[in-house]
Image (cartoon, rainbow over all chains, first blue to last red; front, side):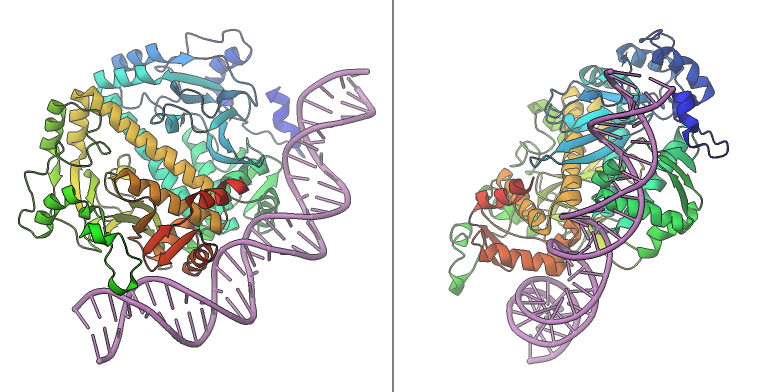
Length: 273
Length: 273
DNA sequence: CGTAGTGTTGAATTGAATCAAGTGTCGTGG
DNA sequence: CCACGACACTTGATTCAATTCAACACTACG
């Protein structure tokens, strides 16, 4: 499924990494899961997870990691479109993306929706529900994806026992707050082109973080999702991507993106500041 | 002072509630501070603070509150324009607003600035610095204000000892994340009028929370600050306020705002959704 | 009392939205 | 395996909300 999918656009003979799943060492575990050989593969633990340097276990020692392992629930994989939770559901858990990607969105009465975030492997979902005890948005898989569910009351208990974990979870939340404030600035003062450039660069570094190419990747989301996230219409997103391509900064083929000149993209943003 | 203050309508003899300082019971403590009788008034503790139901001590028992009291530093008051911290300063503490108000902002290279948040009594400032160990914005007083400084490493230590405090601080951060996502939606899909209405209603409920009138209050920030926060120009903010006044929804006199028809303001927002 | 900062209002401009029409792509079921 | 339908994406023409530019009034503070 994902094998042939990858070289769909192979004009000559392209074939890219489709997601973190295809990093060799991850693939072994993930292949099992995807093929349903073992939806709760006991071999996939925080200790042996490729993402443990980015995710919750960072800064924990081995014995601490095994304690964390015990509270983490590794659910069956999610199909494209499956919901992790819906707006107003009781808040129970935060989730760490193991593979694939997710989007969070809120619906407006007029039938429209706005995307509040995209989540890639190693990132934490659901923290907006902690205070109100209800999730404030709905979150669904953008592609076939797998998740580690971390029941929050247990995470709190364990954080109480492990100062490192408490410290790190404070840091994760603080980071989310810092990121949200950057987005605030982006939305309140950037032009459509600046927003789009910034979005691409952001994805780039997030892909790099999980060991994928920072210059060539597949967008897991639609143009419409991007627009709803950046406060632009689909048409504008499409136009801007075309324009960036014409300038030679990027190459776009449907969901496939190559950053030909990341520095030029950075200039788009900093020139205006 | 606060009694007559309320009837501002008398153009002849204006004198309004200027801030939470003027609530009778708060005034006593604050007056001391403002007059520098006692910049670290020992009587002002978390236990007897009027804000303790909104701020950090919520959900703590008496003995826990006194432990919190011990790590809280009650600094000298800040004058209008004084900085709590500046962008890139080492992160040391989070701050709870005791009286007055603050704004956080980031500068852009072009000399402009964007406001990332406003903070009223009982609200927590500085959490964006937790992860990176540096503050991500600069924060300054909008009027004469006082602050409780909470050194973060000590807060972490105490949170480790007091599960209630850990729980509550997770909730405070979660709430910040949820709020930031609402702002994301606001900035990415609301019109200028919707943003302004939403801003006024937000201020209204935050003032109500600290015991001030939800329908009549003074804006501590300039039109320009509001614009930089909402992603609008000063001119637009000014025009929208005038327009809302002409519609009879609000009355504006410089910094003084009265919400004549809060329901109408709510409709502005929900009509469009 | 003067001046810098703050706020208002108007006219012209413009970036992005909207409206519209089309092509491309993918998953499904016959 | 192909054909169909639904969705995703692109491109163009037009409109419009908000910005920009400009001029002026207010106020508040030293």
